[in-house]
Image 1 (cartoon, rainbow, N blue to C red):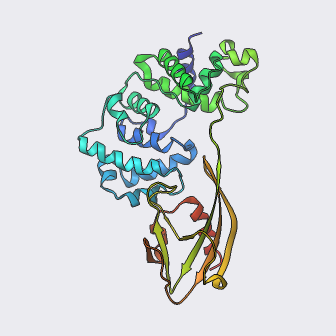
Image 2 (cartoon, rainbow, N blue to C red):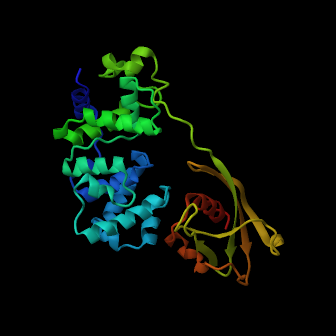
Image 3 (cartoon, rainbow, N blue to C red):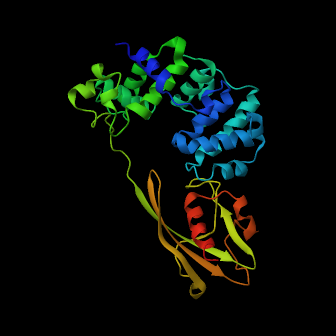
Length: 332
């Protein structure tokens, strides 16, 4: 059975209809790939539509401010993607055209091997194989490969295999086919092996290893972090500051953040929420949230600005802060 041909035949019947697949515009394809790097299609779809409506060309995106881009990105998480997207848009404009080779596409900020291959194959027909989580799973199960996918050896082995299977004259459809096959057919849990067109040649199915493949080394140690926020309300104004480089949520805004509640205003604080949990890939955050209402604006650390409360929606905030604000605004 021809592996690539079988996937292409399956794709014709079951492939997903997605708006960025209806164009060869590299900008639209690149935008979709950046959004979907850490986001499921069903969530990323609306963001892609919103970005394309707001900034229909790379020139329009490049002319936006970083804060405007972060505001539109709000809720997607992994905000470095939005900053990289904006930076890369300006790279493309400075270049004068969208790069059309894998080497040049790879130079864009936030673009790795997978994203470069996806853009190159789908926008320009370049014969470059994609390797993402779906591809790792399909190849590992079908060929019975036990090399850990997050090891240096594994990355090389799977990249070489993926490239060898790619039909050069039909790279775009094949790349989309194998990704869709992993997302719809060869799923992480409960893969649809009974109706799989590759069941006769699948090593994992034949040897009963669909649950154990692919193999991934456990390398991440999840850290816990506790945050304390105080929302200051003073005659219709509140104070916020923008997070700087080198920490989570760079470029996003948040209310007063303190290390402890050893403040002279302790008796004036109203507890809004405690122990609110927010899970990131590498961290588990818990936050306590307080309201401080005062007629006199207190002296705050450098970097804070006072804004009308009515304007708070104009500032990009982390998802955790968004959840805290939702609890606050239900009681005001």
